[in-house]
Length: 116
Image (cartoon, rainbow, N blue to C red):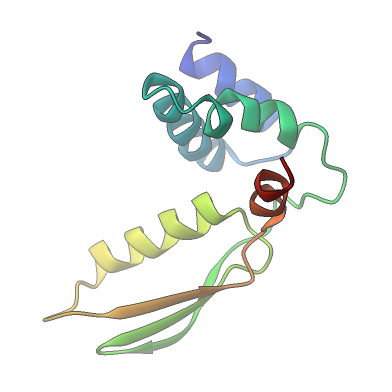
């Protein structure tokens, strides 16, 4: 299996920031370790084939209330949208529960998985 730094370098070469490359590499390598190869390094290879991928896309919280948040992925990969949501929750934890909705995440990965 490739080392984390090698995976991060491949992802960074696609235009992702160092932090985003680290987050994605962690997800993909974890999937490989758990035997979920279709969700692991195969995703890096597949990302390398996508022309319309926007590595600079950044998710944003557009509605923030005590018990509800709505996040717009703005075309960011779902992994990165989820990471931003988790960071947001840790920075401002809810007193009780909070419903979170994420919309407009880059979904070609999901569409591709359903085609196979």
